[in-house]
Length: 626
Image (cartoon, rainbow, N blue to C red; front, side, top):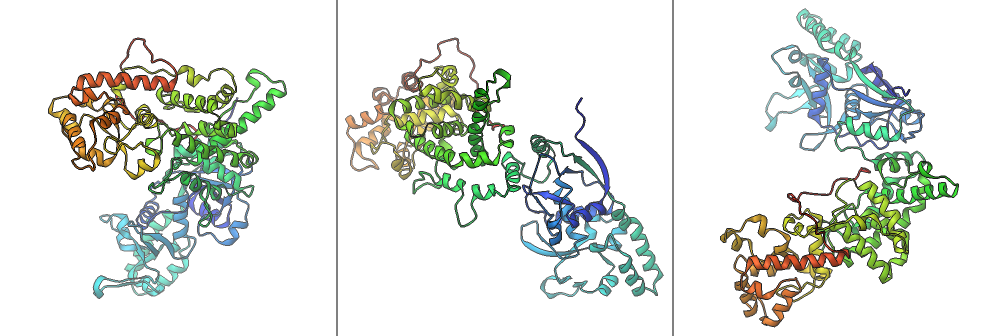
């Protein structure tokens, strides 16, 4: 029977801070820098001074399979870095660093104001206010500049000068740097006030009610033992971390690789002078007019996930060669556990091949007229796409193979199969699609995808993958701008600020009492340039078509024949648009768009019983690998 891998013990705060000072307790390298501001530090000091709980810490015993690169707590002496830590602080860095900085370290604290202005502060406790029950304890905590003089505005009198111990005694201001060892300070205080027994009595009461709370303060520590797995560390950290951004698999893998001397974060983000993979991918095929390329949304865990697919497939093939079968075969996977188990050797082996796969994915998506991250149907589908392209290499340039890849991609989009539970689908496509390209069986994504004709009526939101897919298909099939007749290659797309717009304008539809859920569907939308949409305005189609033909706002005028040709390139029947026949237009264009989708998927739409499709939502959920 498996036992618990953790224990909870209350430990003296002073002991914990001293172990941080000596390097006995350190941080895993994935922990972010200390960021608490001045007000949060004051609040923390106030809580400890009243013996109020500030939350439990979580640590991980070193020496187990989770081999993170350690680093000392910020502000610890250089000797701490030479120590071999006994435990790593997973949760509580901000609290422990703040308390260490203001107490044991004995130096001015470099922090920030709530408005993020860098400052250097010494912290004090106002003895009188701390003993006054009517005063909020936080109001008794002061932060003074580095010279320990708080100056009043505009040169007014009343500066608070604590630049010497004598001035601290006189002002009844106790330095937080002395909260664990106040004897010497008290000796000086008693000597300063030797003729005033009331003030000396006041300090004794302050020591009893405030300072003793620091010396006696105990912090609950949840200690994970060395048998704890990397996955458990990741899950636990995500559940209990109170320091801000959740920890992801990339951060843990970074810390593991750092212990072997490899700087994964530098490899991904660059070092300020050399671009990392993230920047190289974001710049891939980036048009001059665009802020970023189509791969700008590729995250570090996406990259690791693609590499993990190769590594786990290699392990599976080795097991098959050894004669293993069934449950003995390791799974091909890119889930979080697979990422956490990804050895540095595998990363180094596949890193360049996978990066090239993502570059090919950008070219593939541009070929489909998908140019911007917001227009990408599924961000998650880039991972298997890149992995497949990395695997098949230059074979993707062959027409037959590229045609199958296009079919697989559109089945994923219009079957809306990459919106949830994607980790297993990513792994399955990575195994099945390359085999299919070589003549093997049809992959599950192609076989399972279904599209219902009525789904077109419910596509109304830009977040819908299928909605974005229709827009891209129209451009890919040669849609021409109503005004200029230009096809939407990437130069025109960015140069003319192309976006998807209503064909029957919203204002016209509203004036006819047509419901938004009808006129907002993808059936009534198409890609157009910004200038063309301005000419269309909110009038009837017959009116804006007349404007275009007469050259109103356009030079030269457009012939009716050419304009009809432009409309037809958008799968619009010019006759229905010119007659302002909304209902007939919607029925006709739905059929035309359906045929377009059927061609892309290479299968007929599902003709079974209709079901309620509901409202469009953001249908792409995060991968479990994140």
